[in-house]
Image 1 (tube, protein in one colour):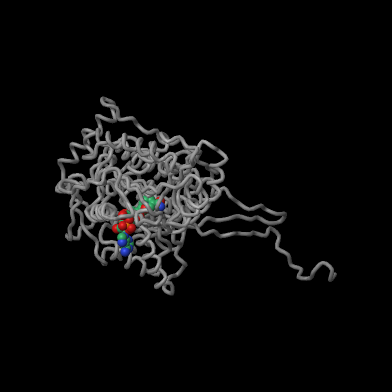
Image 2 (tube, protein in one colour):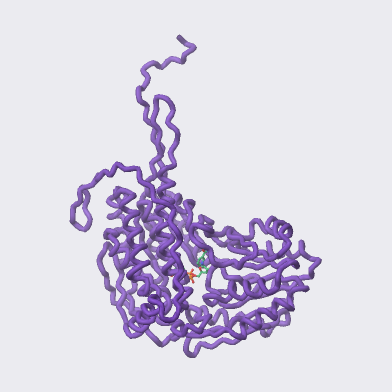
Length: 554
Ligand code: NAD
């Protein structure tokens, strides 16, 4: 027997089937054409959510917890518009969440993995169906994504993570050692001992779900620190998990200040792992805190983090400039450049630059920037005021500098929403500040190199920034692309040939980078699931020996 919230469940239900979930198809991206059922549904939902101010509590051990210490969730594109009021956790509630996660651990670890998968697959179906408009509209309004960007994130990618992970788990559990004569061997994939701290970013609702649900599928329980600027969609997905049948305490939703939550959770001797996506600085801070506490822990915490990037496009002289202009435009400016994979630096040969610039100027002249509810707007707001100020400061710096020139855009206006026009900076020096540092906005910096300096420029691309997340090479000379791909081997965990460096799809391009970009545990692949189990090898001897002598001693 085992108790959850005082209710006793009979355990050891044995389903003796050897079950495997097939590899799913990726969730189709809906078109949202005017008059389509999905468009009618999302328009209605946007109207409804725009008129409501909801209250977001903490959810600990399956129960709503209200602290009365409140904050606002606003629309980045209309920052006076409040969408929700949320309760902030203090140290006390973080400790409660840790206790709740630990209390649910045994029950969840002993729940058959197929039952765990069934709950996650149900959540995927609920989001693919009746909650698609609700979740997408909350992502649009709360995180300032247009319809398409919300659809590929909070619907498709989120659903894909849930469905693919069931298939990956099937493969992992089926990985078993050989049984030699007279012995039985097996590998048991145990969840980690303790709880997982899931710290999630603002920019992808799918990642917020996945950082919890991957460990959860493998039998772990989590304390979830959602991003304050993604709370609306994150709260709704938490509700969907519960409706799908996730038992109390398996995921504990704790909005509030990161510093408090990180400090308290990392001080627990039962911290078994951190599943993080966000900035390099925050992850390094968490890693240091874990280091300081290392003597306290019952087990070495697994640290899995996907962090910042300074993603590049490297153009070979054989490239088609029109293709490059389009990829640079989409790669740098979609979702206002706030994808971790967004193109933010480009190396372009002198012979092609005039045509590439012309192509980008033509596109930027047509692009509209504004509110997410107007489908004409390709670019929406950046997430909040600190982010806006940081980007505006970098653009102002480039305008003042003799080492750079703003050749496209550069206008910033935060009077209504945090709007930044798609901006291209031409750097006269390859180490200009915006060629090196991550800038989470619609800003691309370009360094134009002499066509004959290919090797020197490849070296620059490799060494200019500390990151190693995504990168692209463009060229019609396929052998030259191979050469560049080889030279830039460690520059990116996700590398593209003749494609923009964004848009990885679950199951097709497992995602993650190394160097300062993370531990490269590849979200959307079995590699990531393996971080959330600790294996036990079991050998059974069928007829144990009784004779201790070596054969030659007889
Ligand atoms: P962030 O680091 O500001 O915040 C991430 C999360 O950490 C948030 O929930 C935040 O509240 C929390 N946090 C902040 N300080 C904390 C602390 N001291 N202890 C515990 N938690 C704390 O990042 P962000 O602005 O939400 O996201 C943008 C960043 O994420 C960019 O750098 C981007 O490149 C990166 N990112 C990377 C990937 C990837 O796969 N590599 C994917 C998405 C985003």
